[in-house]
Image 1: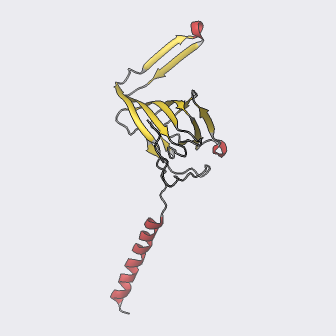
Image 2: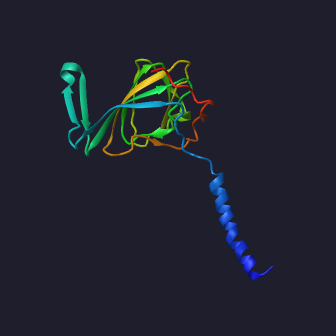
Image 3: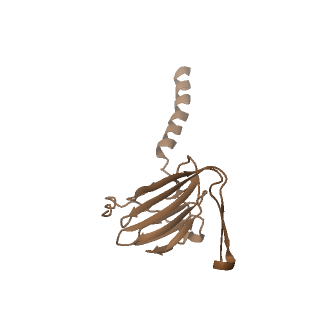
Length: 184
């Protein structure tokens, strides 16, 4: 074997190894499965306009303090989950206030011990901090489930970012065929 042939083999071998690693690497992000999302409203709030304070503890037993520095986008979003549908693991750049308006939603938080799920039924509400908090919402029931969320995020940012599968949480695979859409 001549020197040129040996040199070519030495150059090609690392390239083949690198290529096989890229091809064999599993997809880590977890996109949604069967979920239908409708943006019901989107509004822009200039910096300082979400500086809300209501100190009515004496009268109502209630205080509110919200102060956002920087321009914000506020979304009102409806998510519809057929049985077996889920959001995939994801996060948001800001908080969400979520209400279940139909069915039952199971929420998995990546940072919860043992990824213990919480179950929310029609009429229940919960918050999602966002800001890197990775979670997955899933309809584990037999009927369609619907949530309405109010989301506050930095202006111009992507509302949702897919996240990697957390090591401490169950893996959910999208059923085949994909869950049928719920009647509107």
